[in-house]
Image (cartoon, rainbow, N blue to C red):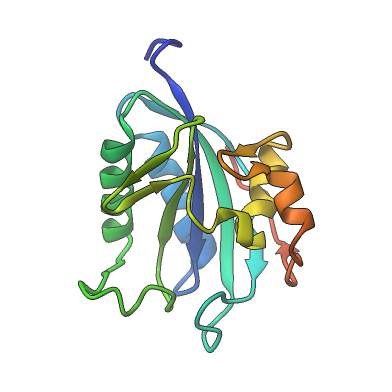
Length: 172
């Protein structure tokens, strides 16, 4: 991977079924093993209240900083495969969108790109509204900017941190 083709991306990780800590650690290893990619950093793990559908277990969330030469669509496809391998089954109608899951991987930022294609929206369209993604993002990238929004730190300042509790550091 040459420096000229590598893009720094940020991926949100979440889990609230099974051994979520082990699932997220395995997902980080899987991200690091993607072709033409390497894991640069990972945030601590955070316990966060469920968002969307609130009647479910709390989530464990983190953010990974990944350097990749994969195009955004290929990276997303690989992320969906990592979810499937972790036992995630998505309903075709999307009715389980905010329900419990073994693993959820979201492409938060792909360099400074703005992408709006079917099934692929970067920056993540709700990143600026979600403390559970902003807190770990800012831990590993304090100067992160969200295209079309501005500084991630300013986005976080506009919302409540919503009972986010740091759990443990990830080994990386």
